[in-house]
Length: 219
Image (cartoon, rainbow, N blue to C red; front, side, top):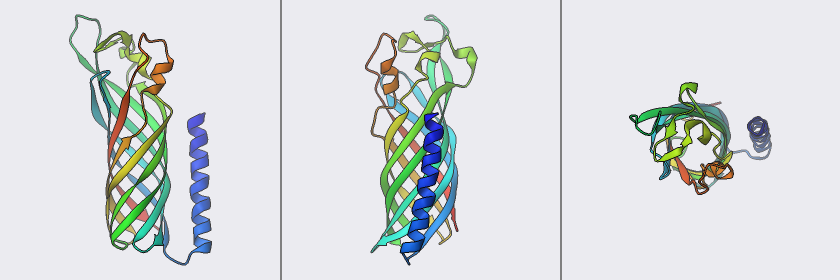
């Protein structure tokens, strides 16, 4: 329910802000659709994980702000994947267990134009709302997480819902079509939700790391 509310609120804010900017500013202000692929992972000492490939897409707007700076705001929906090592019992071989995280991002960040409307450096904060880190297959529910021999694969699904990330990257292309490469790093503990559960451990700590390669079409 929290994820759905965030999607609705985010979409409303983007549309409202864009409409207001069009009325009150005579510089360029573009609305766009973006989509791309992600490479998502979690930096943690609590278990062994491996990044996986996912998808991202949504709505974005870019407007001239001052001098060589633009402002970018929008909402993106993502489906991210990763694997975590586990085993069927303490004596069995380690296997990679797949997980999928669906979520929504609300962003508002700055862009420095190296060449206006063509090449820019982008940076700023992102509010990320996560769903559960769901197992891709129920057959692994009772597997034991490697390095955590009393915790099952099913028990680590409840990651933190709210996460603050910071973004940096570059965008290049034409006035109405651009390609981008961004890196997002989680400033807050994405595994904090596990500390509210009785797992025999209450100091889970991890930070997300995501590379995004995307394209955007502006109207």
